[in-house]
Each structure stands twice: as C-alpha cells, then as structure tokens.
Length: 356
Image (cartoon, rainbow, N blue to C red; front, side, top):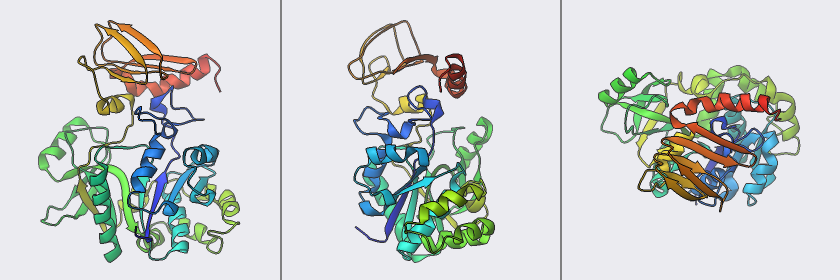
C-alpha cells in the first residue's frame, strides 16, 4: 500500500432520523444497520483499508464517542482518534486532521469520507479513489466524488461540471438540495452529479486553501503547530477547538475555490440518511418487505421495513409501507411517507417519557 495515502472518517453525527436505534448516546454509525454483523463504521474502515494503510486511517468524532470508536475499531491506536470537544461542522475538523497528517507526512494525500454511507461495489470504489489520489499527487487540486444520478432526487446536493472528454471534470458550481422541478432540470441537462460529501486532496493543497479562504481559522489552529502528534495536542484542541468558526467545508472552501474538480462515479452509493433509504438497499421478500434480524410472519403486509433484535418473532397483518422498529424499550410503528418527521417525534417521545 502507498504510505502517502491517508483517510479521515467523519464519525461524529447523531443520525436522529434512525431513531429509536440511533440515539445521541449511541448513534447509527455504531450500529449494524444492514444486518451484516458489522457496524457502518466498521464497514467504512474495512473499505478504506483496502487502499490505505491501517495506521493512516484517522477517525474524527465527538469526544463522547471515544470509547465507542475504540470498541468498534480495536485495531486502531488512540492517537488515530481525533476528538472534537464541540460541534463545529466539517471545516474545522478537516483543517485539524489535515494539519495533523501534514505534520506526519508532507507528501500525504487524504480522503475525507462519512462513516455511515453504503457502497455496494467496493472494488469499483477503491479504483475510483486511487484515480483521484493519483490526480491529487500530481496537481494542486481539490477533488470530490460525484455520484451519477439515477433520478431527480431532492434529498441530495448537486454538482455541476464542465463537459469535456476528460475523466476528471472541472466543477462549475455546487447547488444545495433543489426542489423537484429544478432536480428534473439538472437531470435533463446531463451535467450534474449528486454530492456525496467525499473529498480527496493533498494536505498541501487543502491547507493552502484554508489559508486563502478561512484565514482566521487557519491562524487559530496554527497556534498549535508545534503540538501536533505530541502529548499536548489534545489539550490544545480542548482549549481552542470551540473558538473555530462553525462552517462546512462546502461553504468555507469548495464553493469559492477555483481548483475544484469532480470524478463522476457509480458504485452503488447510498447515504443511508433515513429508514426509507436503508429500505432501498435491503433484500426484500415477494411482498417487498425488508426484514432485519427478526424472524417474521407477515400476512397482507407489503412494502414495510421491519427491524428487531436477532431471533425476535414479529407477526404483522394488514400494514403497507410502514417502518416497524423494536429496539430496547421502544417500539416505533410509523408510515414511511412521513419518515422525515421521525426526528421531531423522537424529541416529543423523550419529553413525554422523560427520557434523557
């Protein structure tokens, strides 16, 4: 494996739309959402480890999840876990990780990837990442992987690129989640991709971009330039991280930079943002029911996603297009068509039942 290749897995989210399985104390990246026997975080680590040395994979997460990360990834050293003492969106975390990696290896090229995505064709993913790494080793560019859209989805951001005969395209602009009318226009134009939030660049290029676009944040983190990869690093982060601007890498860097490129890819990607998106990727019976872990007896039931403890017997009659989740002391029965309300319902339930 190439010793200059590094990865940062973003594992600090809460995943509230996967309640009641995903909670603030134990969010979705630490669960076996797909029924494979491996958590989403473990799957992501395994996937990246096919191209990146194990010791070069860093995990950025909330400080409260340190023990969970080490439990799920016992093969990593504590120094590979970047603990965020405050929620400050993606830009501060990426700058922190880039400076830490640059201190270890100035020739490093890094990928930043979410911990909770599903990728069906992993070998294709590895090959596309290698293509991006090789480009970023040669040129001062910031790259992202753009998913070839299968339809006018309004749940994703979009990337417009300059049409050319080249494999890697120059990015024209980023667009936030569009309405259905605009999403249909984007698909019809043929020069738009879904934004998967997966980034690749050399540490030199991304640190330089931060210096140009987010100078105040760069100055803040440079106060710790002599402390990276020492025993004093965490103390510095604990004292200074919360002072950083709360801004995403998209707004802070990518939308204004002039050297942004995209590689159009198609490897069976899904961001697994909701129960419905998980349902789309699961095997189903003849009535389009997807069952995770449980043993089931279903009558006049169709298009449901059912999740319960392994070996739990679930009997359902007369339900169509529902989310049925039995987890610990909570049972959720919710129409798939209203799944965007689950985040709000989880808050109401916590108040109603005096949950912490």
